[in-house]
Amino acid sequence: MKFTVSPLKNPIKATISVPPDKSISHRALIISSIANGRSEIKNLLASADCLSTLKIMQQLGVEISTFNNYESVTVYGKGLHSFSEPKNILNCGNSGTTIRLLGGLLSGQNFLSILTGDESLLSRPMGRVIEPLTLMGAKIAGREHNTKAPIVISPGVLHGINYEMLQASAQVKSAIMFASLYAKGETKIIEKEKSRDHTERMLSAFGATIKQDKNEIIIGSEQHLQAQNIFVPGDVSSAAFFIAACSIIPDSELVLQRVLVNPTRIGIINVLKKMGVKIEITNKKEISGEPVADICVKSGELISCEVKGNTIPLLIDEIPILCIIMAQAKGKSIIKDAKELRYKESDRIQTIACVLRKLGVEVNELDDGIEINGLEGKPFTINPSIEWPKHFDHRIAMSVAISALKANEPIPIPGAEWIGTSFPNFDKLINKLHMATV
Ligand code: S3P
Image 1 (cartoon, rainbow, N blue to C red):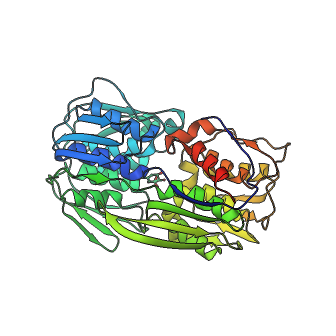
Image 2: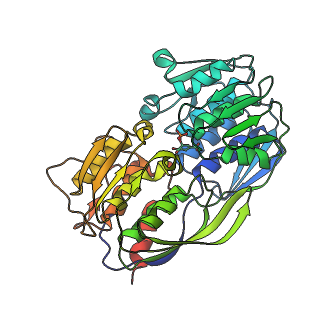
Image 3: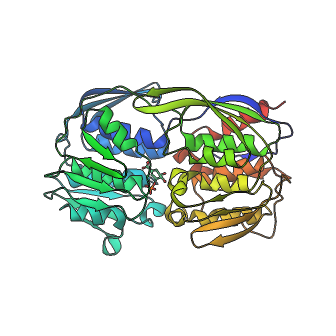
């Protein structure tokens, strides 16, 4: 994907659909592979990250058929103990969810496996999954004293543990949950701050017994998982880019259809309401164990906001685009307690601070967040003497694209080649916004 985004001249009036949810797509592929029977997945996200997971499940011997360019995917699961030893190294590409979730799942297998990824993935922390899995008895090792990938896993005998999460991370929590299916005894996970709960919901939808009480999750081993048909709803993290476009272009109105509105994912909606954006959730229903709805957005006067504490995990992936919205608000906005951003596909505190400076915004980078002086609705102006960041990732590139809708000149989007990891056809949807202005 290579494209230039021009400023919008008129308000947006449109109804759109965004791509399927990435987190749910990964889990649908993994859980249906360890279930018994034929699961049909409708509306799977066919992005580079999810295709890494799909290919690895096939390398583990799972039969998966795809129809009509992934419109429908059928997984023939043969239960928890049906995988065969992969002949080659398993490449997770750019996908942290793939490597961490599969790290847990493969710890319970009776064969050797090696997980690797691209340069960005090789630099991300893996000690956070290697440590709890080792406590469970896994034979798992990684580069740089067990802190980085590639990760090598050999057969181990697993037992349940009581584990208090050191950081809010659905990837770590899910790795432990997948390993616990192969462990002797129960596993208890204690979360100080709640992270996204799709693994809990989907395992339950497939028939697993999971006890949940406030901040504790208890899961037993050898659960019988029965194949299910799954519909993957629109990704609220992808929707956030278009909600942002509507929020920063005055007098705009946008409807996003069939989007996931799981409470562990909609922190961005709650923050934007506080900032003055008018958002309504309509047509709410439950599909495959997840709440799904239409999101109706109307722009309003944007005011600054402080975001911190246990709100952070509920909007962790939306922080780059939230920063673009904050840069258009009146007053100084602050994001704190978000050091986790430094360990994403890029160091997102550093990269978004650099992007904002390039867009003519005054920012102060904090160790665990950022302070942003809003432009009060004035267009972004490109500063030619500042470079774009050296390392890009999909969410940073899409944040630049949205800011270009409110810039003083067209912007050729730097790092656009990363966008396909989560949002195929992002450029086409941006064009649709251009055509849907009044
Ligand atoms: C994800 C969890 C989050 C999120 C990532 C997807 C998941 O990561 O940032 O994009 O699907 O479990 P952490 O678990 O590292 O917070």
